[in-house]
Image (cartoon, rainbow, N blue to C red):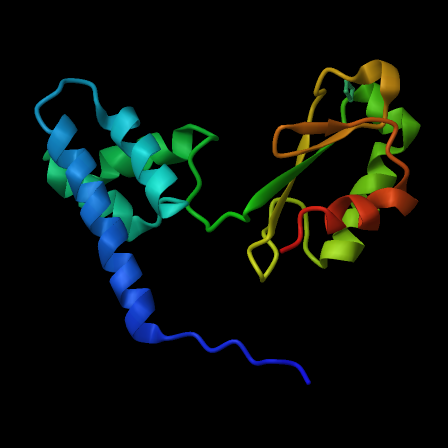
Length: 168
Ligand code: FES
């Protein structure tokens, strides 16, 4: 029989409060340091996982900056995300070498397997799926990365086995 996972909302709230407290500590640390906004946002994203508007407001208030300035910085840099991200990031290369050797087939198969589009995160927050433009393995195309690991000459039929290594 399958065991149902129950989610306790009190624990979630507690966890949330802890994360906010940690972000406040970071803000406090950088408060009077000139040009610290990006640093604070980086650390806030590491703590919270992403930068929703409520976190952006917290940072803006804490540093005495307009929310519009903070949001502008968040949307300018691609390493900041306003959406929750998966535990692992999959990047399929669609640079020229990978594209002509089947990179698009990897993308299509992964969309099927994960049941999401490029740029999205799976409902279980296990994977965020993105494409890249050359990850430095052109000689062994098509290539993809999961977090920091590069997979070369990837065959679409091997994708399930590769992903299985990253599932909890
Ligand atoms: S084009 Fe894909 S690794 Fe270079």
